[in-house]
Structure formats: structure tokens, C-alpha cells
Amino acid sequence: MLHFVEAGGLPRDEFVSALEQTIIVARGPKPGRALRSLKLAVDHQTRIPTTAGIIELLSAITWPGGRVCVQLYGDDPNQPLMDFLDQRGASVDAVAPYRYADNASTDRVVEFIRQIVDRKIDAVVFTSKAQVKRFFAVAKNTNMADLLPEIMSSITVASVGPVVVDELRQHGVQSDVMPHERFFMKPLVTALCQALSHE
Image 1 (spheres, rainbow, N blue to C red):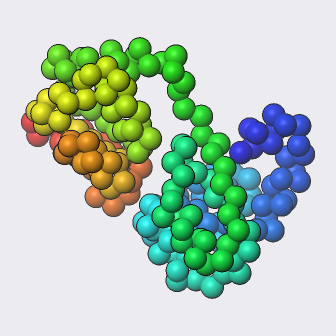
Image 2 (cartoon, rainbow, N blue to C red):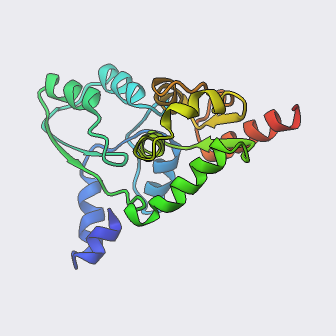
């Protein structure tokens, strides 16, 4: 969001000052750290860094409703959260500031999927729901999606958290590795290294 503020020629200090006047809810420690680097305090941080965690948190606190800005993860509209906020009488503005690879990188995704199909890959790591959706959309467009569930059952599949595990399950793929409590990159890498060291 700061990138867009600066790219649009808006005063950075005014943006940060405006954020100070709002109630800030963080989905987990990572956004909390980014906010603290701007000397902004997080008013509420979820116990579990998921949409369900945000809903649980907001259900347990008294808040004024009004206008709510939701920073989306990728282009997922996050309908459960939107529905919850609507039920609480909030006016919601959603922004999608994350930048993902464009179609120019599709050839690289196709090549990666082909290597999986050719059984040249020992482990696959997924770090977001959007990543899983893109992976299987490309696989479907290249007629390889039906091959993946069986082939991926013979390699190690790692997921950063339960949201990614659920998305993989919808595509018929079982996740073998997931961090136990903290659903971030470092715990994911640690869990994957432990799993591979026992093979």
C-alpha cells in the first residue's frame, strides 16, 4: 500500500498519520512487524492467522462498525469475511495490493508441472491459496490436471497452513507437511527439512 501511496505522489506521512487514527487488525505477526516499522501499533492480532481467526477475533471484541478497509490476499474476494462484516453493519472497501506473476511466466509454470508429471521432482511447496489455484489452472489448460493427484501422492507436498491444505484437497491432492502452529515460511521450511530428513 505504501508503494501505491508513493507512486501516486501522495504524502506518505499523511497516510501513516491517517492509519494511526484507525483500528488496525492484523492477521498475524508478519503484518504486525511491518506496521511497527512505521511506528504503528496493532490494536488487535488474531490468535490463528486465517480468515476464521479474524472473524473469531472481531466476534469477541466491541468495535464501532462503520467503514472497514480489507486488504485482500491476491484477488480472492474473501467472501466469508465480507459476509461477516456486512452482517455487522460495516461498509466495506476491499483493496488487492499484492502483485503476482503475469501470464508471461506461464511457460515456467507449465515446465514445472511437466517435471512433476515426468517424476523429476521430489517435493513441492505451496505458500498461498492463490498459488495453488494458479498451479491447477495452468495444469488444466495444458491437460495435465487429471494426472497430478496420483503423481503427487508419491512426492512430498508441503503447505504453509490449513487454508492451503484445504485448497489442495479440493484438487484431490493430500498435503504431507504443514507447520503445527505458526503458519509462516520459516516454520514451513523447518517442517519440510524434518520430513525430508526422515525419508
